[in-house]
Image 1 (cartoon, rainbow, N blue to C red):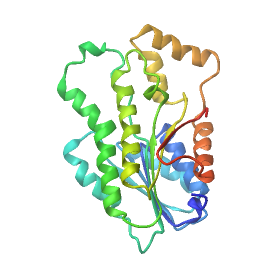
Image 2 (cartoon, rainbow, N blue to C red):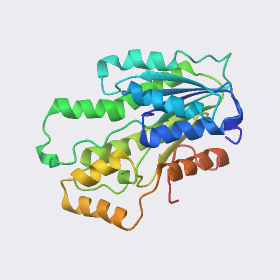
Image 3 (cartoon, helix red, strand yellow):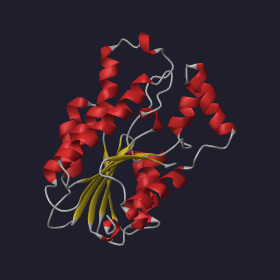
Length: 258
């Protein structure tokens, strides 16, 4: 994908209202020399999406579309995916990409054995896994030719689970395997799972402050104490380098520290 940022691209970024997703959208927009590209920002918070759009406009002339959407609402996923992808046209764009960044840490206070509400678990699965599945399959059905790229925002917890994070870690692992299996069926589509390291985001701060498992809370506090928490700019910059260098095995799971 050495030419990734030189092609006219239809690019989707989920979870673009803040944190890693906002930084991802901003850095992607700065990198494109093909200024007829379009970046589609997806999140529940329309005012935060508008802020991201305005930040992009300060440093890039590319087109920006915002799609407010609750990816945890199963009944709306089909309509939402249509809204997200309707702007794509093979006549207009030479390339398409989707960056699956949206996600939440889940309930890290309640012991796993006490998390027995099927509706709550189903909603979490929809927001963090099912939505990725549906958006990816719809993406592939809309974009059948040309260079295509799918990125999954992973986490080190997919390989190193933590106490209190059973649902979060298991979903991150499932997303990784989803892309690995999908790459076997679609070897012509470039895919990557990127683990961004521990970054200074609202999600990290929530996990640190609310973790109900003592060893998990201590581990996160130690990261802060030892200045081992990355800025989102540092982590996303590494992702940009990975995309430009294009040396990773298809559907590889690459960590910031690799």
